[in-house]
Image 1 (cartoon, rainbow over the protein chains, first blue to last red):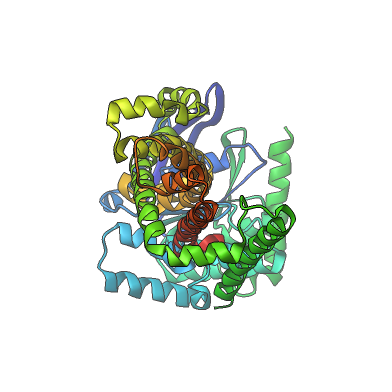
Image 2 (cartoon, rainbow over the protein chains, first blue to last red):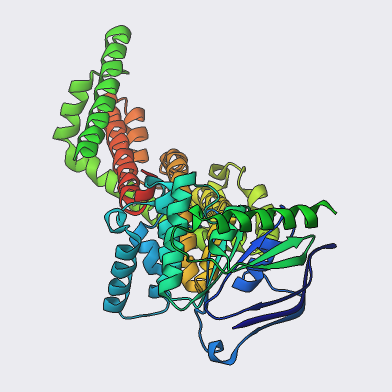
Length: 243
Length: 247
């Protein structure tokens, strides 16, 4: 659905992304992992259209050309608007797309119900917990029904249990809907739990691609295959980032 | 409900605090220059129509000046906050003009805009507008990057961005700027109303001072104070309605 070819990007003289080649296929999940400053967030921002790349190509397949909201991003600090309630944060994207009022309300009600945040609909972001803020940010993005969901270390600020609950929720939503997902993470466990493809980045380049077929397996975190894959990713990271 | 009771409680505390200090001053000074508070309030109530007429003139001048300052200051502040060239062009002018005591320009304003209301309104406008511009500019510059990125990712157009992102985010700073500048503007208006007019609370206070009618003078001061309370309460009300997330 999305092909990135020979893509490069620099901040001034500093090269951040160097000749990136990447294919994102329909209904797949891709984890991008690597040390700080390796260019993973920049790559995600370029995919989201938040940064303009200077060299290379980024091509959407034909069936996605006409969709205005084909991609949605959840930022590291969620990027919720402090002056809007949870409900109004989720509504905003639909309102600005000039959708009919009834359609907006129905979609917002459905997504809040699905994410279990109906009770906090009238609260402002500073009045809710980190996990609830995360759910609200997911809701604001998912209500626009993106075909590609992008997440930038979206659960990094959460405690271990809330993080797992959110990961379970994201996985459930991914399995229910026909969207694709690309996420940046520092956590090997998260990459292995959610990423069917795990990309290891270093110094602006994709150094290694690891396939992970067990995503969506019941009780995945308790399976030996989960730990084996974590060890594989850790070894690859150590190998690639120590040179 | 509890918040409303607390707010009324605070106002009453302020009123009683001032009355107490005033009573003590009256007892200590024992001079006609500081009349007794209850005598003054009684005078104020008996001559309400007279004081009110002058207050309405002053209120009109302040409200028109605030409205004009908001109408011109907000867009200019937005240009300064949103566009780099706007900041480069306007900030040096603002920094040079802002510290000048505007009351010094009252004679110039009188020559340019006449002896009527316009010169006094322009005087207050010249005091408030710079504060508004700076407040709006700083409000915009303080918007976190993630908020800009979020609005960009949601596909907001320029108008939606101003309506849903810029305006609500600058509102608390704008109201703070307004509170500070209105206090200064009311003092300036008091001085401005002493020239070429026979209407306005500034004129009423100073005229009664010259006439050595301290009771009427203090009734005017009470009126001016109540007008301040009304304006500041109005700003508080707007803040409680439009800036709920700050509570």
